[in-house]
Length: 368
Image (cartoon, rainbow, N blue to C red):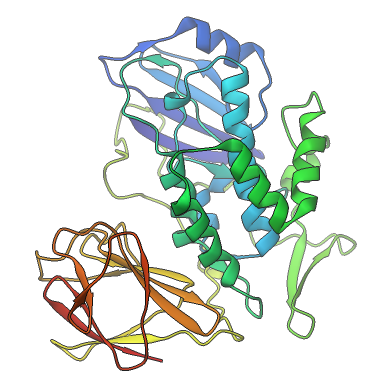
């Protein structure tokens, strides 16, 4: 499948081109067109192999997660994912047709509302990895400074402990982390509207946000009436008049247009992150995230290891939890070692200052 998206006049439009061997499910398309299902972009079947989707203005989730996110917003995103899946099941839709890809899930940056694309086709899809999708957000997220980051590592451990996607368990975990989120989602479920906010202006009138370094509180300035630096019309991808030309393939490089003013480089001042020294060339790698993945596939990891085919695409994670650090092998082909001791797959092993971390035959010295 191929995707193109743009925002114009405060509305998000996503065009999806399906494969020629896939058949549109008229039953599902009819449900999506007639019902207002919160969390799903509304489709309009334009051509045989092309479906247009519409919703409130938003950016891709992968783009949004590059900006500092609070703990509340992190779990609010997770709660909306669970809620959208429940909506799919409640409306007798096929869960595997839900697109769970950070590049093609959209979020309104004012209301923090998530919008998914559901492809109403009759086809044999592979099993939808909801757990993997929810875990991927933890790797992509950038957190607000001056806040405890342990919750990300704990969340990853919880997600990995699940044998299968269990709505009740995940909802209970989110509620334990923040009861207000569960109440907010429940309140929204009672509304007939397909959207979180009732007033359209909430989706396109930006709220000025700034970070108070003394209190570590994110403050919304709703009284100034000021606009941020974004233009109301903002393109996410190159968008041609003829949809069939210059398509962006979801297997290729994502063509996101990033606003340099949004790529804020804020450090986690209350957390001391470790670093690695790559022995073959002396390169220093800062482990600057609570969950940091290493491997040889650039699009999957936080640090990609070049010129070594023995390393797996997603080889191992380094997890920061308080003042302790752990390594978790991600089912790599040639194993992960600490001081030449092989690690148990998918199990966290503590690592200390001066230890030698080896991914297959690639060695690093771990420093705090």
